[in-house]
Image 1 (cartoon, rainbow, N blue to C red):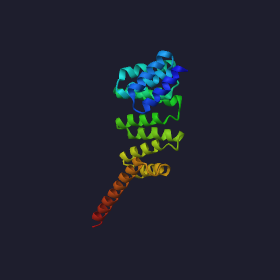
Image 2: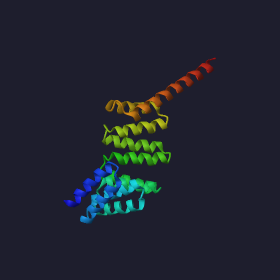
Image 3: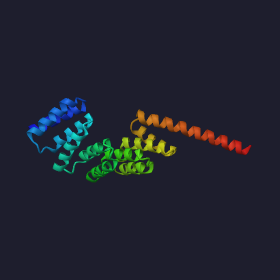
Image 4: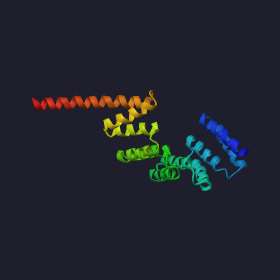
Length: 202
């Protein structure tokens, strides 16, 4: 009970950006109960935010050894691998998170980041669509899919995704910016197309 109390207080500090207080509370939670998987996970998250990747890996690995069925912990471990430049291991962890909890939207978002980084926009889109099949109302997935589709020059499809986001959150800045860019690109394409047709006709 006392161990969890420190962990919960630490999570509040972590959310508020007070990393030193969060670390102190998580360490105290572990001191009181070394087998507290949540405390190790939370400490790993704090170390990740601090950029202390070796320490983050150690704590997250301990957490997973105590409880391997934690989707957030697998996602955090994937983030550590990504920060270390190991995208193959990161993908494995994100997929492990999805295996534990299929509707883990963060896992799909982070997978899309990895695949986009590799230049594989089709696979990034496919992963986001898989996430949306399970969580069709998730605005983060719709927005991210819109961004990927826009980058892949699938402008009409991107506009559909941004429209969906704005249907849920009318003032969503990311969706508004994406839609503005998409409409601008669409008008440019239509204008250049009309110019090309006109020249050919002449």
